[in-house]
Length: 232
Image 1 (cartoon, rainbow, N blue to C red):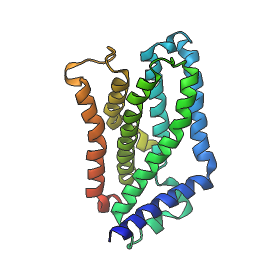
Image 2: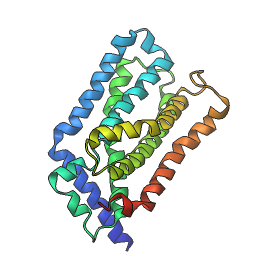
Image 3: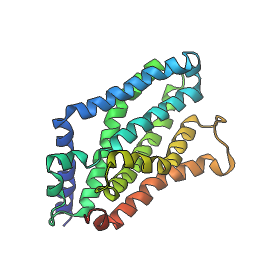
Image 4: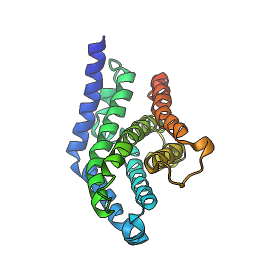
């Protein structure tokens, strides 16, 4: 039973990877888009301003959000275009495996894009050498939770809007309001004690709760609604 479920989950992941590899421009195009934003932001703010921690981290997360929305709007699109979605949704396939496989794939895809983007950001925004280790320790767990929550939410919204007209426009519109809190949590936690956001109810423990709660809540909702999400 468990081995069959894992096989199906890995099959969903493999089909998704093949879809991206067969359309190399889709992954590379998102990376180029993110790199262009990384280059353009210093021109907008000026080289001196982007060296300040708040602006540097704010730009980082704004660019991450643009990239995330671009990717989220394409969940299931490649499989649908290539006729692989029918294979994944045949009666012998577990809906749970489909949901978890797509969450896993989008999580890995986001990480694969963020690694080169972080390298570019590190150089263009002149991240100081001192404190770099602490910044990585702050940034990596926050970024991973941000990706996981984003992937869970994106899969649910794509399932709910699968038959909607203009889905690739509709999904980002629905996605962004729900994503705002996890984005603000990510910004605040990487800035630590800087006075960018109010404290009190928005103290660090509250932001960690949001980051951890997003994948738990939306992942659970996706699994509970697995049949309803794909009934059409």
